Every structure is written in structure tokens, then in C-alpha cells.
Amino acid sequence: MHRDTTASLDGAKVELFATAAARLGVAIARGEPLARHTTFRIGGPADLWATVNDQDQLRGLADLAAESSIPTAIVGGGSNVLVSDAGVRGLLIANRTRDSDMQMGERGTAGRLVAESGVALAGLARWTIREGWAGLEWAVSVPGTVGGAVIGNAGAHGGCIADNLAWASVAYPGHAPRRLARAELGFTYRSSVLKQQPCAALASPDRLAGRITETVSPGPVVLAAAFELQPGESTELAGRAERYLARRRETQPTEPSAGSIFRNPAGDYAGRLIEAVGLKGHRCGGAQVSPRHANFIVNTGAASAADVLALMTLIQRRVFEQSGITLTPEIVLLGDWSGQE
Image (cartoon, rainbow, N blue to C red; front, side, top):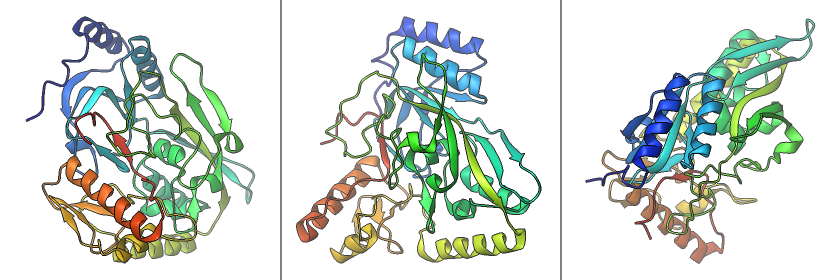
């Protein structure tokens, strides 16, 4: 049974915050179960939960939360994240900003696609394919939203966000948005400078729970991103995308998961290392290392976040003992892990 998740928040402060949020057109819910909002189907309740539908709401709510010293995190499609069984202290914002606009150049030249951060990346890729624009077809099998993809430099099939990004509009609560060019975002493999500045309710992406210090310092809010695309032939692009999708169906699990659990170390693959230590198919409670792809942990039906964390810790230990390589989590640990060691 989960404890009263709002006990740590000042009631009067929350009421004032909720009233101010209502003026933005945003309703604040309490104790929202997060398992229904993550691809892992795992997670306790959020103290406070809100859904935003445009950039003004997203910026305004983040500003209000910062002014009220309420820890805040933002989620899009709910992939690439493991929410603790105890839930999230503070505010979790569901980003549903979904406008996009294609700014075309002269016929036969490059175009610029601007998409808000809540747009589903795979859906955006499918649209570009239909419209004959090349550059994002690698993303047709990638879950999550544009905002999360920018923060984590999402990639697949030899492509990644950094390949086509022109700029991202980023705001820190209390400050005006800035348009950051690709070079300013410090993209590296599955990371960016934004991922190193997590929102207050997020655990560090490079650490496991039990070694987390949470603060109320606000993190970056991605509002939108622009991609440079080239003219392409729709049939050819669709064929390429279908090959990517077929490979995903063949190699990745269909059970609930968060995507790849660990980043690939330089010159090797996390899945190969995990399989080499005999953990492919291994279970901890309801969590299992996928028999199809060892760098996926799947929820077999009743997994807890503690089960997944125990399996991650075991994997890290076994791989380090055998190879000397420390696997770095690719997923983000979100929420209250104070009871986990």
C-alpha cells in the first residue's frame, strides 16, 4: 500500500499553486497512479499531476512550480523512464503540446520542420515519410516525444537527433526561452547538456537509486525543436522505414518495457555483455531480462520498480565482475527512491 503522497507538501502552498494553475487552464490532480502513464506499466502515484496542451501552459506551470519550490519533472510518452514504487514527490507534468509546422524552402531544396516537444517522434517520422522528406525515417520505431528525444539524443538504425537538429527552444523556469543551436546542446551518445541538468524530481540518469539527492532547483524545459530535412522519394523512404520496423519486430520484445536499459559502452553492446554473463531471461520478481534482447527488461505482468532496480543492479555487478565495464543506465529513474538501497 502506498503512503499518503501529498503529506510532504504544504497544503496551503498547494492550494495557491492549484488556483494559479487553473488561471492557465490547467487542472491539478493529486495522487495520480503513474503505472497507467508509463510504457513499463510501473510506478506509484504522483503527489501532483497536470496535463498541458500548449507552450504557454508548459512554461507557465513550470514557472509557477519553481516559484512555489515544488519539485517538478516533465514526461511525454512515458518511455525511457522507471518510476519508483513510492511515486513522485512534487509535480509531474504530462506534455501534450503537439503542433508542428513544415517550413519549406524552394522546390527541391531542404525544408525545416518545427515540432513542439510533446509531439510523438515516431508519428512525426511517419508524417515526413508520407510527405517525402528524408532525415527522420530512422525514428519510425522510436517511442517517446520530441522533447525527450532531444534531451537524450535518441537514436536508432544508425541515426540520431543530432544528425538533423537545427535548434531547440529551451526555457528554464523564471527565464525567457532560448533558442539553442545544435552545437550548444553538447550532444553525445544518448545524451546532451540538458540531460545533465535534470528537473528536480528526476534522479541522475547516471546513477541508480539509493544514491540520489533531490533538490528543488528547476531544470530545462524543451518547448520545441527544428529539424533540417532533405527532399526524398516517399516510396523509397517508406521501404527503408518498413525494414527498420521489421528488424524491431524481430529483435525487440513486445512486453511492456522502457526501451534499452543501458547505454552501449564504446566498442561493444550492452546486450552482448549481459548475455555473456548468463542473465538473458533472468528474473527478479515480475521483471525479466528479455529472452529476445538482453538490453531490455520487461514487465511480465506484475513487476515492481524494486524488481527492475534489483535486476539492473545485478546486471551491473555481474558485467563489471566479468569484463571490468560499468554499464550506464540509459533510462531515467524518476521519483522517490529513499526507501531503496
